Length: 396
Image (cartoon, rainbow, N blue to C red; front, side):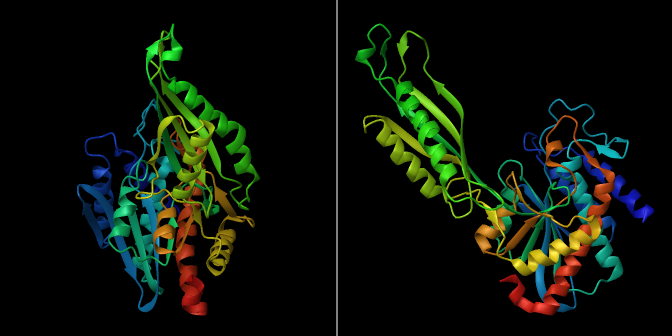
């Protein structure tokens, strides 16, 4: 076990040493190549998948009996180092491993890699397939996961690695950024009646959000793990000088969707109310600038897959000791996309605390990172046993 733990830490440090974020010209390509080479050096049948210059890495273990396809999935990219000191050093101190991506998600990449190595070395008897999938661009657009889905994603269960402190995330909200552009008519500030003030129109719209929509959302049915939908006005841009009636004002909004909401309904509701509060006189356009109908960032809710969730929860409990380990998550993940497009189960679990992700002091507790190898390994084996007992019914 000690040699495995050392291998895990050293592999994570090698991954931390490789920058990979969307602001780089090569983005996460070097990380994809590094992971591919590491898997090949372990004797594993890895593939580097090229999607128009963005790369995913895949490695698959197939059992001798038919059964479900279970995907262990996490991402290749991180956020930039920002103000972090020595972000790619991978320093170990007081039981913690520091560096950009340590918790989000270089450590998880290493843990899942070693799970695959163990499956092949032990020639594990399972039903179906275990696929390790590392995708590009999770931090900015989920390009890698979207390309997998476009190309016939076939998982019966997707286990996404993100920091949850090894609790089982089965639901999270969807997200859409909505932009409202109000157009007016410019005039000199000394004769404002000669113009039409776009900021005033935007203000009435914001008042509607604060005084009407926010209370309305809070009164709607709560999701038992996620609560209610939410909305936040995050940015306002308008006007040029105090002496000029503004002819333009832009309002940008963050809207979090609960399961059973969709972006078309959300946009229709906001557009109709914007028209009402301005008595139909405002000239405006409202659209989604992130999470639109064509490229949604939908909610996740795998609550209906009770056999799978019971199996996974009990498996995790045996390792971590936590008896109540099913949670809703406050952040969005790639796990939402398989559920949305294929209707199959997806969960989120990984070592570390999300509060450390993206921070200038990012770290992961090594003890929990070590536990994650056992968690992922035990989960995929448990799902194989579940299939032996219940067959395909467990996945419907």
